[in-house]
Every structure is written in C-alpha cells, then in structure tokens.
Length: 326
Ligand SMILES: Nc1ncnc2c1ncn2[C@@H]1O[C@H](COP(=O)(O)OP(=O)(O)O)[C@@H](O)[C@H]1O
Ligand SMILES: [Mg+2]
Image 1: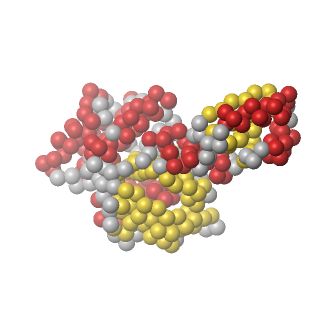
Image 2 (image 1 turned 45 degrees about the vertical axis):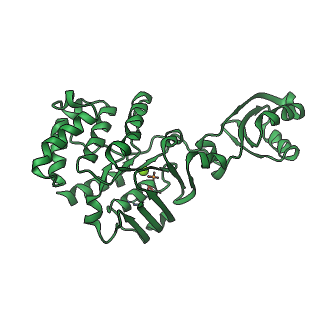
Image 3 (image 1 turned 90 degrees about the vertical axis):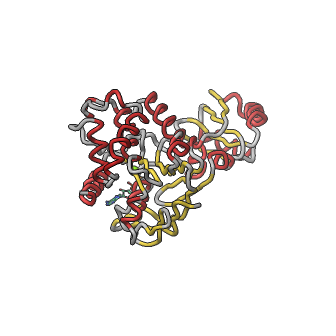
C-alpha cells in the first residue's frame, strides 16, 4: 500500500519555485530517503505533507487523506522530527514526552506506559529526570524521535535528523532509525544532504532545484553510473580531460582538482589511460560508485557538505506548528 502519494506537486514562494512538479509514492513500512543539497526543496515538501504549508498546485495524500483539505486526519497519522530541535530544554526528558502526549490526546490510561516505553526504547530511562539542556546532541535527537513516536503515527518524518551530530552519534542514530519500521510498524520519510546516509533507505528520490532527477533503490541509482568511478589528477586537468574524451568513449568531469571518469570496466580502462597520457598523471584511484557520484553524474556538481542555515523560515514553521497544536 502507498502510505504517501504525491502528484505533480508545486510550491512557489513569490518568484522562487521551491518544489517544481514532483510526483512519487512511498510504500508502507519502508524507509524513504529524500536526498538533495541545501535549498533543493526537501523541507518544503515535508511541510506540505505535514499540512504546515499548502501547495501552489498538485496533490499530496498521506494514509489516504488529502494533506491540504483533510489536515486533521493527516496530522493524526504523522510524527515529525524537525531540522532544528523543538524540545523544551527547560523541561526534563520525561516532561517533554508527557507534554507531547497531552498535545496529541494520547488516552489518559495509556500515557504513562507510552512515555516509559519511549524512554526505554531510546535508552534514556536513566536520564529521564534530567533537564534536556544537559543532553548531548545525539541524546536530544533520540528523545525527539521517541517523542515523534509517542502517539503511534503511521509515518515519521525526519528532516535532516543527523545534522550537527558527531560521526559516532550519527552512526548510532542510524542504527536506531533503521530498526524502527520493524519495531513500530512505522514508515520513515527522511531527508538528508549526506549522501552516504541514504544507503540505509529502501528507496530514494534525489531532488535538485525542486525537481526529482532520479529515484530508485540505492543499488538501482548506482547502476546509473554503469560501472566504476576513476579519479585522476594530472598536471593539466583541462587538457587531459579533452584528450581522455577524444581517446575513450567515457564521460568526464572535474571536481576538487580531480578528473572524474565513470567507466564500465575501470580496471581495464586505467592501464589504457596511463599508456596514453601516463607521463602527465599525478595520481589515480578507482572506486565503486557512491550515491554522491550518482548526484555528480546527474547534475555535474557535488552535494556540498555545507552546514545548513537554521533559517528563519524553519523557525517560523515550528512556531506555526506549535500554534496549531496549542
Ligand atoms: N517560507 C519561505 N519563503 C520564501 N522562500 C522559501 C521559504 N521556504 C523555503 N524557501 C525557499 O525554497 C527553496 C527550497 O527550500 P527548502 O525546502 O528549505 O530546501 P531544503 O530543505 O532542501 O534545503 C529555497 O530556495 C528556499 O530559500
Ligand atoms: Mg531543509
């Protein structure tokens, strides 16, 4: 069953087209990754699905309900972890969860049990009575995920869940997130601009400048590359790129001072390149394609690992979300 269905969705902010006619579906109980650089339109799409924004045109359905006209039905079906933390730092972990269970009308008889379950689930039961402001970034994220699950949503939205976390916490959080669909029968809709993180997804859509430029499983997407990836440094990359293009039937581009070649059989291709332009080659390496390579091939640019600004638009979204739930 398709728990999310998006048809020809468009969102404009004045002259900016943040979401430009996208369509996709998400299968229930899977992890869906929405992948793209900053400003691609990921958060805007999530906000439409979460009923926080109305689309300019097109349709979005969640759990069979129209995200624009049946917002209260949709809201009952979702949990959200925002790009920026929206925990109350002056409350304890447990208080944050209890407060949330009030907001979402969790039945009184179940409140206590669900809160304790959630604390245990994210391994924070020992810290339940500590103020959130004393928590590390990773602990706060785990608590937010726990909070997002308390009302048993059908879909959990995670907008850049690992942003600002150290590598260790990122790895831990991913292990935890990937276990969620089985444990909680929940569908995960996540965004990230860290390409390697999307490897855990069952299906990925790559979005750039508001448009979905590719979608499929991580393996399917990597097949777009069609073979291996060769990185080459030479004394004159421009000249070498021209020569390689003329000599071999391969696609060539440049990034960070290295020539990027996608080749069907890299191990056969390298000796030939060395034979032809070997004296100008400073270094050469070959690897299996990554999702980053896929993005580079499709757009001619790399997803830059820049720190996303905690823009005012997101803070305003959180505020309006809270207003609606007060
Ligand atoms: N409330 C808003 N008003 C005007 N422009 C916006 C607003 N929200 C987002 N945008 C613009 O829409 C584009 C997509 O933004 P966003 O969906 O936040 O991208 P992402 O989450 O992929 O980084 C960007 O150009 C952004 O500046
Ligand atoms: Mg965003």
